[in-house]
Length: 177
Ligand code: APR
Image 1 (cartoon, rainbow, N blue to C red):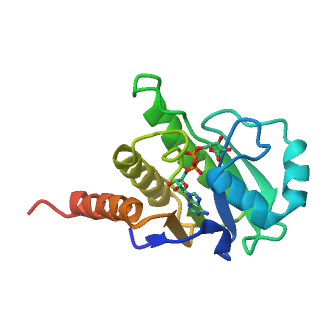
Image 2 (cartoon, protein in one colour):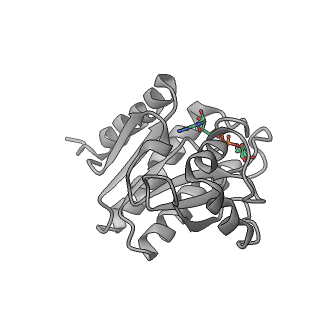
């Protein structure tokens, strides 16, 4: 699990292979981290996004990073929280899994995720963090390619939820005896 790390900060400042954007289905920008990424990347990002034809919930699409320090942006669309009976957990897991699959396909090994869906989309943060950490851990278990996966949280409470999920993950891994 050493390849996963939790940091508190602004994901637009990270100079990695790719940062993940919590976008909406139009991919034409918005508020939250989507707005921050578009502001930092500059207008060329929106220009490229316009040509992508949107993105379904749970899927991911790649663009360049333009004025961002990150080389690429992986745009994924998280589920809007509807009470937990509309497949939200599986769709959120899909965002992390498909983003990593896309990264692997392009040889991108150092990636940062925001806490997808836990802002405007209302997904409970304490429910989202274990899904995020477990899904990334499952991919890393089968794929030695990745260098480092950062959970870039925008607040200390969000970071603590991710750290707690990481700790319980390694606790599960410990041999029983
Ligand atoms: N860096 C890292 N994390 C950030 C940043 C930032 N600069 N700005 C916000 N966040 C965090 C939020 O605090 C939250 O924990 O990203 C997480 C996701 O929140 P949102 O950005 O609101 O995204 P989401 O809940 O997935 O809602 C997506 O919001 O911005 C619109 O266009 C977007 O319609 C889409 C919706």
